[in-house]
Structure formats: C-alpha cells, structure tokens
Amino acid sequence: MVCMTAGTHKKVIVALSGGVDSAVAAMELVRTGHRVEALHMTNWEDDDGYCTAATDLQDAQAVCHDLDIPLHHVNFAAEYRQQVFAAFLAEYAQGRTPNPDVLCNREIKFGVFLDYARRLGGNRIATGHYARLDVGPPVRLLRGVDDGKDQSYFLHQVPADALARALFPLGGLQKSEVRRLANDAGLRVHDKRDSTGICFIGERPFREFLGGHLAGTPGDAVTPTGEPVGAHEGLPFYTLGQRQGLGIGGRAGAGGEPWYVAGKDEARNTLIVVQGRDHPLLWSAGLDTEAAHWVTAPPALNAADGFRCSVKTRYRQRDVPCQVRAGADGGLAVRFDAPQWAVTPGQYAVFYAGDTCLGGAAITTARPAANPVAVERVAPL
Image (cartoon, rainbow, N blue to C red; front, top):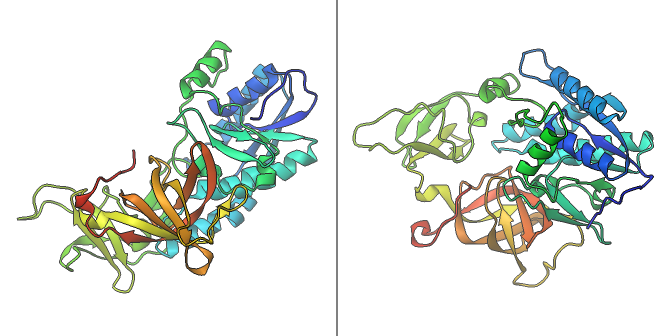
C-alpha cells in the first residue's frame, strides 16, 4: 500500500477543487509531514449561472489559508473541451451514453494536471478520490474502503505510470470520517454539499444543455411492436433505462406501470419504450466492448474459456460475477452470471478481482437475456 510517512521532504501537489474531499486530502498530507502545495483547475468556463468555478476558487483559497499552504491556479478549459468534451458530444451524436468523468481523470487530472504539477516541482500528485493504491511494482488500483463512495471505477483508464505518481489520502476513510475531520479542523468547507452532475459542467437542465451543442430530430416513441405511444425530442437526449422526461401519460388498457427507454432505432428515428421495470428488453445476459485498458498486465484471454472476475457496467452498481473472453476487433465478450439491468453502450464495463480494479472498456453492445425472468437479476443500487 501507499503510505504517507511523516517527515518526508517530497513535494506533493494536491488537486484542490474547493470541496471537502480534496481539502481533507490536503490536510492529511500536511499532517503527515509532506511538503504540500495546491493546484486549483478551472476546466469549464460558462456565464449561464450554472458553473461554480468562481465560488470553487474562493473556497480553495480559503482552504489554503486555513492550512497555510501555497495555491496555484491553472486554466485547462481548452484542454477539457478538446480532450473530453469533444469526445462526449461525439458519443451522444452516435446514440451512446458516455461517462466523461472517466476521460476527465485520464486526460486532465492524471494527464495535463500531472504534467503541470511536475513543472511546479511536484514529486507526487494527490486527489480526493476514494480509492487506494498498491504501488508494487506493479502498481495496483484498489477499491476505497467506503463501498458507497469507492471511485476506482472512474480511475480504471488512468495509465499505471500516472497512478504510480499519485496519492489517495482518502482511500482508507469513510465519507462520514472525512466530514468529521474537516469539521474538527475548522475547515470552512466541512459542510459544503458534494457536487453532482457531469464532471466540470455542473448541475443544470441536461437536455437543454445538450441541445445547445447537438441537433436532435423529433420522432415517435413506440412500443417494441411499433405502436406509437408518445414523442421524443431527439434520440441523443435519451439513455437506456431512462424513466423521467418521457412525457407518456396514462393509456387505456396499459396499466399504471411507468415507461422506460429500452432502445433506439436510428434508421426510423424512433425511441423504443417499454412499460414496467422488469420488462425483458431492459435486461441483458452479457455485453461486448471496445479494446480494454488494463491497469497492469492484461489477463490471459488466449484460452477458450477466458477468465473469471466481476464487473460493473455503471458506477452505481454492485459488481457481479462474469466470464470474460476475447471478442471481435480486439474487444471483449462478457457473459454475466445473472442478467443485468439497462446495460448501456458508451458506459464502461470495469472489471475487478476482489478489491483490485483490473481495468475496463467502453461498452459497444448489450446482449439480450433469453429468459431474464427465470433467474436472479441484479440491478444498479
């Protein structure tokens, strides 16, 4: 495990967001004797009232004042738009649902941020992620001890050499402990609400935001048999398993169960919707992926049976046992032990062996479950 030895003279550059997690990460490094400096990133610039960059910078300045550490400020908005946001829009335009936080970690926090921190003389960087590291060699990415906050899912695409230069001071803590430590130390961000929503874009009406960057052609929302039951505003604005915002009211003879998005027919510009969370079309027996990124050496895929592990198909989900084999075009073919709900192309399948995050890959297709009601099913938390 990475340890933080008191009295070290190595300089650590902390990614200080202005939130409680990164503040406590910085505080713990100071407490254990590191030479700590903070670097605050501005990664999104917007004047529409939803971006909190100015407030976050002020909070970061206050934390550095409380901890008596230097604060640097850098603007990576151009890099974020080029390396993260452009890919985000391209995925939505293709009908997929991307996870920009994964790219943000790989390209920004452990990419351009790491490079900038090294120019500042930093030997290591640190973040407020809830994850742990065993630097080995080889380096291993481990779950955080707080199951509800573990963020190894979002870090699985980070290269091993970048992880080897990182510290995660919160990996062994519960979120409640982090809040308590901040409160006990008198950090003024101790009760600041956690940010949610898309990485660095903020909390805003998502469909309205996406519509400002992508064109959507309205069309019909239909049942699997083709019966029109409503309308959609453009296929990019919907994701599999979505329940809210469909605008499908009660229909005679349809019962009172809610409607969910089960698919998209790009050729006909129709949104396929089903009624009831347990509808068979919402469950998958497996999935296919693009080429995987492995944190260390790739598992053996040359054997006919591949290898056994567990997998998450989205962040807020328990990982479940699966069989992984080599797939088409350098990707993976994954078979779940139990069907999974709303497996979504564009999201990531992330693989685990116990507490070790092995790596992951973007999902390309979901394989339908032949008879999902006949076996135990596992849905997201």
